[in-house]
Length: 298
Ligand SMILES: Nc1ncnc2c1ncn2[C@@H]1O[C@H](COP(=O)(O)OP(=O)(O)OP(=O)(O)O)[C@@H](O)[C@H]1O
Ligand SMILES: [Mg+2]
Image (cartoon, rainbow, N blue to C red; front, side):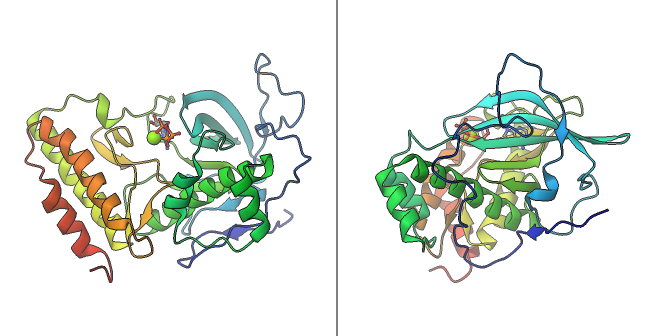
C-alpha cells in the first residue's frame, strides 16, 4: 500500500498556527468529505474515501478501534447538534466488516465571535504570522477561516494532551482544517450520551459523578489547564462514565494572566450544579485543590 506522509499531534510545546491550505478565493462553504462541489442537503450522502490518510492524527498509541486504512470509507450520518460555535455530526467509518462511529466537530467561520473573546482565550498562544494576525483583526473571510481553524487546532491539541495524560476526554482521531474528528461518546447504534445537565441522579450517583469530575479536573490541572467553559452542558455521562467535552478554550493556567479567574469561574459553575443536587461541592475548596496541582503555579 502506498505510504502517505502522516503527522502526529502529540507535542507538548507551544504550537504555531499552520498556514491554512486554502486561498481567500476558494469556495468558503464548509463542504463535507467527498462533496466539495454540488453540495445539496436534500441529496443522500454517498460514502466517500476515508479522510484519515490526509489529516493530522491523534496521539500514539493509536487505540485499536481507530480505522487507519486508506481503503476505508466515511459516511455522514447527519447532524447531532448545531451549537453556537460548531456543528457536531455523526460519522461512520468502515473497512471490510469493521465499522466505527465518530463525532465530527466542524467549526464555523467566526462571524459571531467577538475579537476580545478570542484575544482573551488565545492569550499566551503565539501568533507569529502577522498577515494572519491582521486578517483576524480585520475579520476578513480569510481571517474568519483562520480563527475557525485555530479553534479546531486548539481543541485538537488540548484533547491530545489530556487524552495522553489519562483524562476522561474523547480520543481525538484526526484534524483536517476546521474539522475535528473524535471518539463518539454514546451507544453503538449512534445515540449520543446525555449531558450531565439532562440527568436527575440519585444522591449516590451524584456523589460518584462529582468524584469523577474532580478526577478529570485534576488531570487537567496536572497538565496546567482549566476547562474555561465548564458547565453541566459540557460534560457527557455515558452509562455512568463521565467524559469532559468542548475544550477549545481550555486555559493554560501558567501562560494566561486570567487563568485564576477562569479556574474560579469553572469551579463555581460546576459546583453550583452539584450543590443543587445535594452534594457538598465547595467551589473555593475545589479551586484551591486544583490550583495546588497546577505545575509551577502560585
Ligand atoms: N465526542 C462526542 N460524542 C458524542 N456527542 C458529542 C461529542 N462531542 C460533542 N457531542 C455533542 O454535541 C454537542 C455540542 O458539542 P460541543 O459542546 O463540543 O460544541 P459547541 O459548539 O461548543 O456546542 P455548545 O454551543 O452547545 O456548547 C454536545 O453537547 C454533545 O451533545
Ligand atoms: Mg458545548
